[in-house]
Length: 430
Image 1 (cartoon, rainbow, N blue to C red):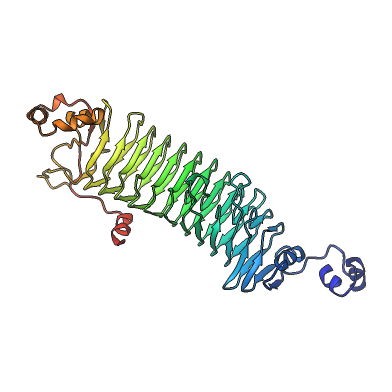
Image 2 (cartoon, helix red, strand yellow):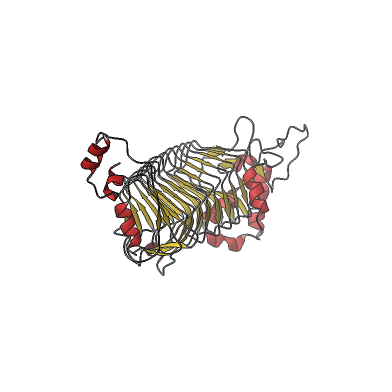
């Protein structure tokens, strides 16, 4: 009521007394405010706005940087642009329950030290929603800096590609933001598509990431979900480091150059239903323990799975390794059985029989032998690959399995690869 009294030229106290209302009367319903383009008009509209107002930005350029210190909504008409003119954070949010949607946002500053970004959500910006925006020519696209339960959804984010990749920003950066969600965004350019550090209870779902270093990069982030994402042609797909209790499911990595999936000091995770095609290494596992790898597909990679001796108590079963140049690279002497409860994995190079028709091969599968171990430790030995001595060693292993030096064995290999939806999505790609 005080806003109406002010418009009539009265003070709030005089207006309330004149109509017999207490000063504590309920506030007005939220207003919808049309904001024309032009210098200073957006900042002025924000200064005059009340909590809950919807500011509808007209087509044209609206000057930034601007700060949202009240719970308001910024909503853009087609061709409405907020331009930061290369200064700081184009839109900075410090109030809870803010929504930013339907805008083109561009022109942030270029300082990683001061956390410049197109949209910056501070720790006090709880439940902020940033959706359906076109975000280009910024250092970081959306910086969720401690804002709990914030949502970045349906945005198109194109990052700056700088000469030195470490000077570039991430598409979405999540830091210590419990409950934050990054959903259905298209992210390209810059450093990492989505980078999270020191957070928990996050969901990264349904994003498409291309033309970046790592599609999704986890550091010290626990009890979170990475599902239904697609990584295309990046240096690496899903890089999970120093993080525990994750669900990594139904993701696609297509032609990522180095690794489709990498786990380093990642523990107690469920890695299920993912599909990787055309990487140098399908999945690289280093010092990652007590994980459940199940129903994943690694296809046409240089190495299907590179498994290191520091990884223990992992369950690896019902996966498919198809057409990889080297199915398994394991440099170690321990004996590892990659089957669980009588079911192993599918190996495309396993010429096996199934006389009883139970879907399990009648003999165990060994992906590596003594010759592989020698080649990994001494690559120069490749010169001897066609020598009679190497053929004798291979013949001896076939005749006397006891001379194997340890390594991976699948005691119950599958006769057919398991069906997973992510593989169907991968096959549908051109």
